[in-house]
Image (cartoon, rainbow, N blue to C red; front, side, top):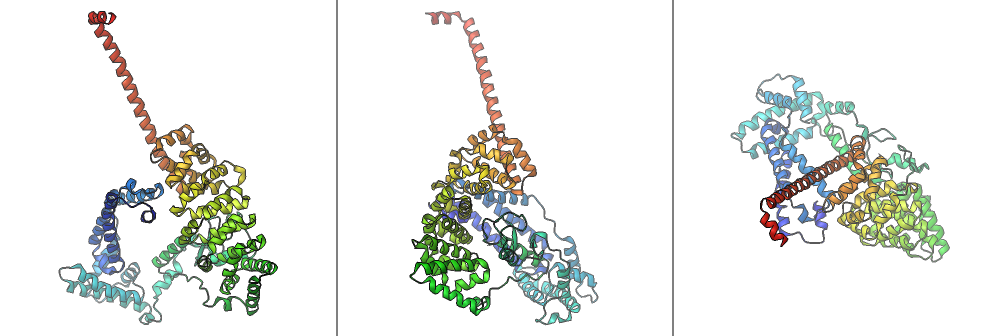
Length: 622
């Protein structure tokens, strides 16, 4: 939401800005509380659990009230973002009504030990459980706990912090003594792991989602392929390098071979490792001097010879060198590193403006293959490649235009590059390719437009370039093989006010209702997402009426039961809106009927009055 506010062109009205001030205060309170708990003494937090839980409840309530005061209409927040904020708001409301269940066993055992710190013989099984539950299993953990414990007790302003520190310190010493008896080398910084930690590593069950589908090992560097499946980078690169062009899991043909880092999954794996006391898998590091370690001296010399030909004024030399570099960069990751390190990127960018279409095609495709390696993306963009790639996208041969679109998709994986690419005129050129290209070209254009349109500022550019009518054409062409890509792109654009208007003007409701009933799982969820955007805001009654006339209810109920997770959520929200609409219609019809009946009664009463007063009739006759 805040990103969207930063990107808006108009200043925020003062009254609307004022509704954000309570949110700022609530977020400060939340950050302070998380810092207090994250950096503080674990023993203190457990012993003072009631006080800590009360603080969490207060901060949750403060956040919930702050979100409830925000003026979304005045802030001009998109429907998509507003939906997410309202979901968080609803969760915070539920949190206010719920009492969290603390680990009463941990609190009871720790409190018991706290009150018996002077006893010499403590059951080792209790000390083991406390050590594991408090995550005090290494010498570093124990040292940090000792420091944090003193700081938190003093900061708490308790009645007699001196006595508390003494008792908690004695408790901590008993846990430390136990851990060291389990592993005598714990006292040495050189070996900080206890037997408890080793035991956890052996018994923890790795979640299936964290395993690479190819190797079945815990992923170190998860990456996403074109089908949306995630693999360990080294495994999928080996698969692709061996000549495969399909997704190992789904067997679908890959529309491109770009690999996108799955940062969310990597973070979840890191959290799981930390929670289970498992050492986080190290990502493979790129060598500090990749050209010397990745390429042999012979390969290195060959690349430099090709770069000299690339700099030649002779078109034949440029064409052959660019073609060979294109193939080398396609072959493997080591070559991509070596070619970039040798200085090929600026030379290839210069060739993007040549009038020789074949040279241009080789140059842009070589850049595409180089961009697959994440570290090369920054070099390509910072060297000024985007205007040249857009030039090829507009003026190159069809194959060159297709590969230019794929290159923009690869570069736009980095969020900050989405903005730069959108500012340099790529979006209208991609829309043209979506209209004129081959089947492959259209897919490349659609995937690039989808990725770029994740940034809110690019959505309006795509709509103004005329992308919505083209998408509707792709949705209604089942033989074109682009229905899923078109539906996904439409769902992204529907969250923008201009996009929603254009979709409504394109008479999309019947097509979307049909797709919810008969499309693929991914298409159905995206169609529901688009309809949900249409059925909100000023025109919602119009679109709700259209959807109801098209017989959407049955398909929605089926999607709510058997759809994907996202599809189910969208279907349930749509059903709620349609139900409210139907009830509203019924109430309006009842009011009309009541008024009609009242009017009939009035007519009868009026006639009776005239019958009782014939003089009125006489006057009227006259």
